[in-house]
Every structure is written in C-alpha cells, then in structure tokens.
Image 1: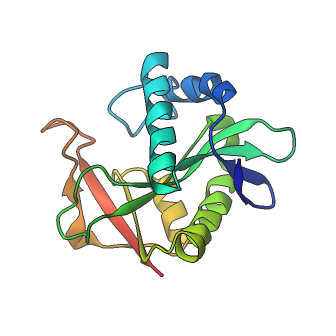
Image 2: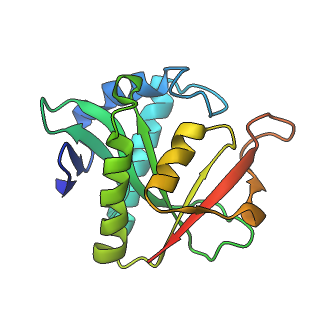
Length: 179
C-alpha cells in the first residue's frame, strides 16, 4: 500500500519481493559502514517481519522506498517508535531514519523521502517530535538530518545501549525536530 509519494519515490508498506534487495543492501559493508556488522539474509528477514509488525501496531514504519521511474527498491525511509530510551528525550520517542542501496546515494533521495516523512509524521500521524540518531562520523546522514530541519542537541548525545562498551561506533549523536 502506497502511503507517501514524492517527485521520485513511493514510500509504501513492504511486499514479500522486497526481501532480496533489502537483504543485499544489508549485506553490503559499504552501506553498513556505521553499524557494528552486516546482516545475514535471515537477520534481514527478521528485521522486515519486525518492520511489518510495527506498521500493524503504529500505522507507520520504515517504509519501502521505491523509485517511481522503473520501480526499483532504493531502500527505506520512514519512522519507528524507538525500542530503547535516550536519556533526556521525551518518551515515547519516534525515530526518523533512512537507508539506501549505495547506487542511490548522492541523488537527494534520502532528503526527498525524509522531508515527506516529516510531513506525514506531523500532519497525518499527529506526532509532535521526531528524533534521529547516528554515529558522529556519519556525515552523509547528519547532512540529511540538517537539510530536513533537524537540529543537533549535543547534550543528549549518548552511548548506544545495544553496542558493546569500547566499540568505536557506540557513541551516537541526537538530532531533534518538533512540529
């Protein structure tokens, strides 16, 4: 089901044929540079099940991002309720996020999709605040956060509870946006 469309993207719920390109994206070490590891096909399949469950529960999720021209799956752009708390961030927190296959980087698709998700979050889903997190060195993602109007709140930066102590990707920056 199509929920959001932009000039170049359709943001929709996930179809079963999305698993293969999703798993390929998650197995790419370049795409997963700022995550502790790549994902196996089984882990990607479990993630998609979880994403579908979140849509059923919340009415939003990390939407499949499909190109209007040609119908290829570019990755995802969407939002999800965070499954852990960030100290100092009002709960329940909803995180906006994106991940694209590397052949779609540098084309403005993440920014285009994220702007549409912001509108959807505030106008359709009735949310008041969005959170975005990443590691400090993920400049591309931070640039998208800034382009869509989010602001870095340095005093909220934190050590990710699901990343091992001492791991170089444990520290995360926090960006916020309010309606």
